[in-house]
Image (cartoon, rainbow, N blue to C red; front, side):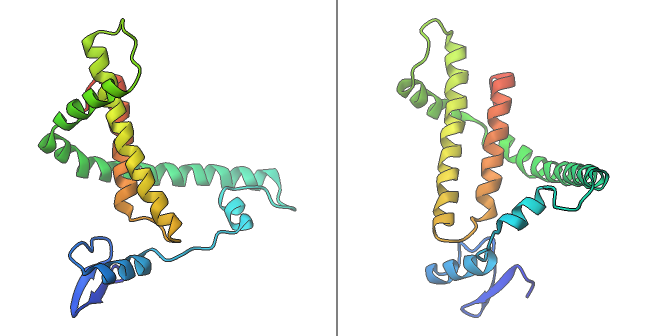
Length: 175
């Protein structure tokens, strides 16, 4: 068993994908996979590169540049993994749900009368993604309210919705 799997009812389950696990065990596995963390102001500020008494500006600059590089390297590899996972699914699933939800968003939100039908459709698709993202944020807050970190799938989905919104803003469509 790896550190990402847990045994439940005599079977190994991946802690990040426990849908087949009985309900009570799923919650226990999630709590083990996403333990409560204690955040202190000092740890938080240190993590952000805040200055500390006695540190000189040159050392802070080296640390700043190293952190920028580290974040850039991580982000590049992270985005590559997201693209690899998302692009084929986007083509497979299509975007008809965005058109349908977009029509509902158009009916419920104020839209300037002078907009063309295509501008209204783009607005609707964008608003539909924002609505989906809101649902993910609500799920994240639900986990936080329970004193645990959310499942990484919620973060991933939220990231994808943000990318979808950016693409809709630039091109008018997701796929």
